[in-house]
Image 1 (cartoon, rainbow, N blue to C red):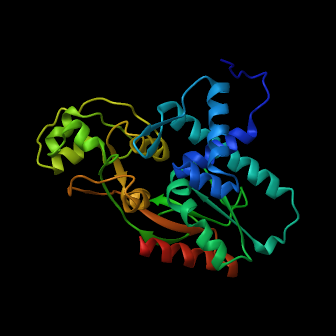
Image 2: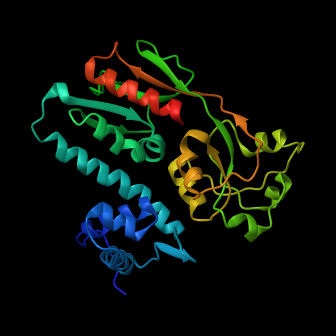
Image 3: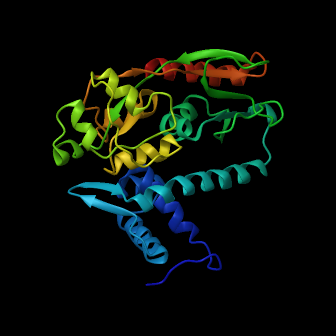
Length: 296
């Protein structure tokens, strides 16, 4: 079996096809997005697996899931391709007044914004919307960013902040994991694989809300980014504490389920911020974001 190293040429087309397959969790949908056949997607993914020497997808009946290696690669490839797209766009001539750049967390970009981008483009084809995804608190003025979707208490010095919405946190998992592990009560999760995040609303807090005093929360993988955590949950690796704004689409589509009604109120909310009162195009973007958050 061949393998890739840092002296080998990057299999860019295979990585592009893999990114689409990972995003849709479906080879047919990925092919439609790329304008190629389902079999072509399957071939490119197989080629990439041979090059890397790892399995990227696994099947469970009709369902397709990323392996842990596939999940890790998908996060990095998504960011890398996004950077390449932005680099190409930046060297193209464009009317400055038509460009709106938004900053947000990578998880918000991937799980909330990305599925809705087509709606925005259809509604406002005249606006060149660009996304800067970062876990760092970006200085909007220094980085020439027009606005941002931020997660916090709403107090950022020198910025105009508009409240978008709050959220709740609750356990989510792949649909077949419940029957596989025989989980029927919150206490059963004390013996299940748990995925941990760096949020205030942790598993100990949720177990207490579910009526379990002084729970001995089992250890498990801790992933710093919500995108990686939810991808691991989607591929059946364990239970995650899902933030309602980020899991809404997966719950609606049945890719994830929330087995218990016990929820935690999140400590922070989402806000739309800008250095000044937004101009025409940024106002259109802000109004659309507000509308979509209200719909969620």
